[in-house]
Length: 139
Image 1 (cartoon, one colour):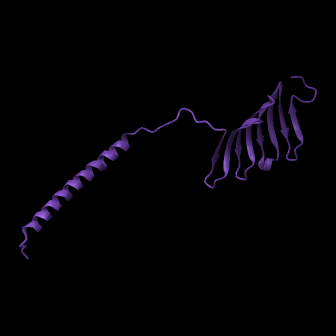
Image 2 (image 1 turned 45 degrees about the vertical axis):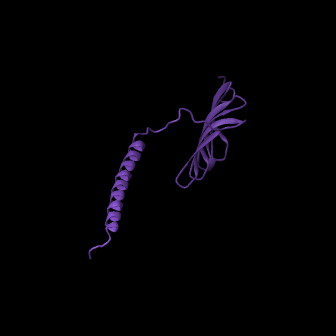
Image 3 (image 1 turned 60 degrees about the vertical axis):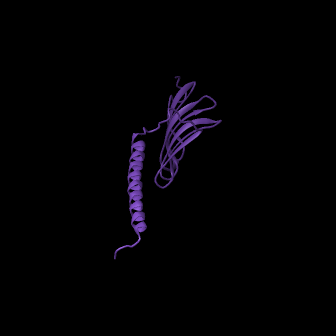
């Protein structure tokens, strides 16, 4: 069906030109944004500071706890039940050590140092099985 109104054809041509320009501008803007984000290097901090850091597993359970407070600075590795299995601690009183604990904190091997050092093994009831240096031994 022919159009008797020439202004309608002019308006359609004008809209088609605008559409092509906007399409080209959109493509160009999209390319610029992609290039800008692709060129951006990852930001890595030289120092991260906090009084406590925790690493959690997929279920949200704390598995590693790194903390500092008025009594100790320590790194603790926890099992699935939330019990400490490995601990490395420096206490405010000056002593420090490393402890390996059994399941449910039953049994342990503890290396401790304050002045002279010791290595102590505990049974599952908490009794001392062996200590180096032993009673009466001099370091």
